[in-house]
Amino acid sequence: MQNPSLRVLIAENQYLIAMEVERILAETLACEVTIVPLTRLESELSRSPFDVVILDAAPNDNLNTVRGRMIEAAGANPVFLSSYDQFPQSGTSRTDYPFVTKPPQPEALADAVTQAKRQGASSKGEGFLGDR
Image (cartoon, rainbow, N blue to C red; front, side, top):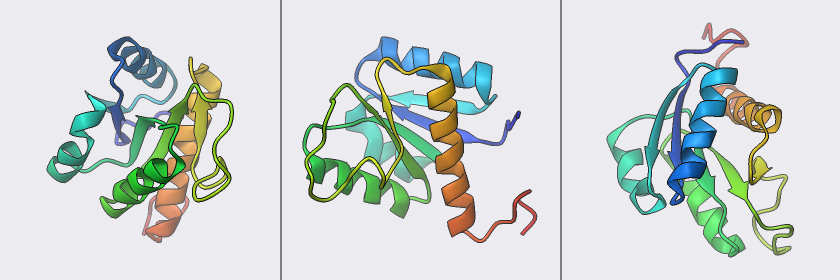
């Protein structure tokens, strides 16, 4: 399904990974993508609206929770990229937000972004086709 109005921010310090994520999204979802280093996440969220933010997961569960809530407060939904096998049991878990393992596989990444977009649409009261 093509959705050129989908705005995605990729906050990743490893530029080659960010470029691979951008390529996958262009091939699977046809969305508008912006790439920034993770250190510029907050400033980019305050500058431009996004539907989904893809970011590198921290090994610290509390930091993932803080970042996830910051992204939600900006009106977007997070998708975490992770090279970690396990996360601590407190706070955020793989069921709170979509997690995709690195290197991201096209189908898994597209599904996670679609899931995050759907969560955002339902929390904003939009209809299935965005008709509200």
